Length: 222
Image (cartoon, rainbow, N blue to C red):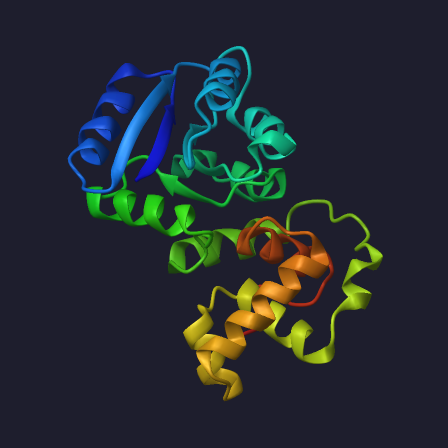
């Protein structure tokens, strides 16, 4: 059972998401929050698998609430999906840097919401959809990039290659096909990269790859 917490200051939004998720086998909404501070408190209390987190909320915004959750060692297994609207896209890259595993637009289709919860719960990141790749690429070029740390030096040449493909939004199967590897080998490379970089999930690999200048938006050709 995938346990979720819904954090949004609009009752109607929470009710809509609750209705969608509660009707799905294997997903349970265990709590709700109307602001960021309450989202943190409920997450600490309930230890859900996934938190759906709105960005603009009173008391504590979703970005800061996400940072608090992902830096709490007691909540290491909790994944956060940021909820955004197209007029708030500037927050997307910051959300991923804060430790979110991905993001959704609020008018997403029910099937996409359910898929997102399942994907993030199993430890993957929401980086495959083309809209996600486009937005990450666009805003990665806007933000001030810190100097990449020495952790990248620990990666082998092959691991750097795999990391760049992860950052481009490719799945393990797509990486395997592109590099002529088995899917299991591709998955192993990704796991080793995450371990060496201390990344919670694939979303943080994306952020690190852009910050390190390993790839530039639109570099990958079909």
